[in-house]
Length: 109
Ligand code: SF4
Image (tube, rainbow, N blue to C red; front, side, top):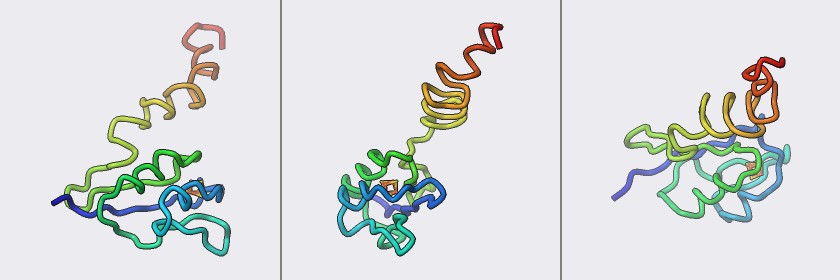
């Protein structure tokens, strides 16, 4: 049997879109500040919770396996410092395609 997950929402990132609450009803709710929060801090592993984290437009939801401490979402090695969408990642990252990093790498900063 899989270990429970710890689910957290980074309220600094959350824009209150409600996507998570509609993707995983009963697992997320918008609080009185219009930000999402998990309805319980731990859950049994569920695809809909993972789907909510995956579809969050702000990547505000993190899921951690309580047994191993492993990051379930974002997946370890993805979205990190050098991963897609990260600081040195793909389009949209600080150093991403179209950003300052490409020009620096091409010597045209
Ligand atoms: S989907 Fe993401 S941004 Fe939207 S309410 Fe949920 S946590 Fe906030």
